[in-house]
Amino acid sequence: MHAFDVLGDPVRRRILELLADGEQAAGAVSEVIRAEFGISPPAVSQHLRVLRESGFVTVRPDGTRRLYAVRAAPLQEIDIWLERFRQFWSQRLDALATELARGKRQRREQRDNCGDTAETPDRRQETESDSEEDT
Image (cartoon, rainbow, N blue to C red; front, side, top):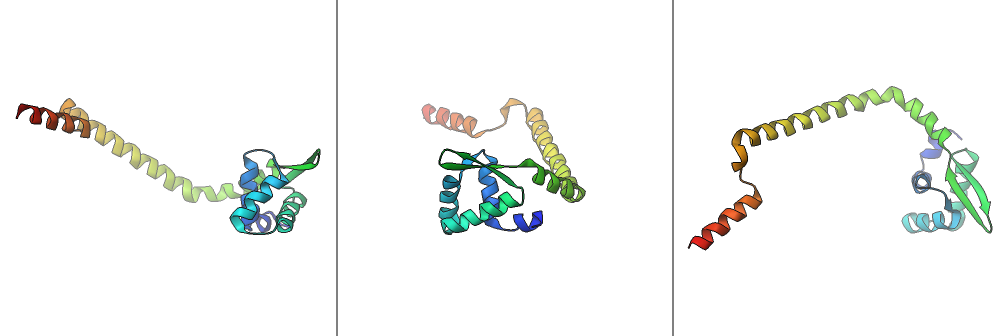
């Protein structure tokens, strides 16, 4: 099965997300997937089998449990393939970062030009409290 066929299924993507946090027992994975997707334990086992046979996860026995973990290699292969497409969003993200930095700089300059007398919510409350005490 091709990597994108494997990852095309939302259940398998969610299983990989769960395993990205570390090795987990099949039962724990099954509980989460059953709760989120409403599928049977045998169906979860089938998804785990597809992930295992396609090389996305490893499994090892631990007493009576079977512990699953993510294998990095297939995900790295997908990452390499996606590299050519990053230009489409990285330029936009760079432009967004530039605009955010420009906005921060402008706010800082406005604050500096106004001195420390800029009215903040805390300062406004202090001023209102002082006015009430004077009356």
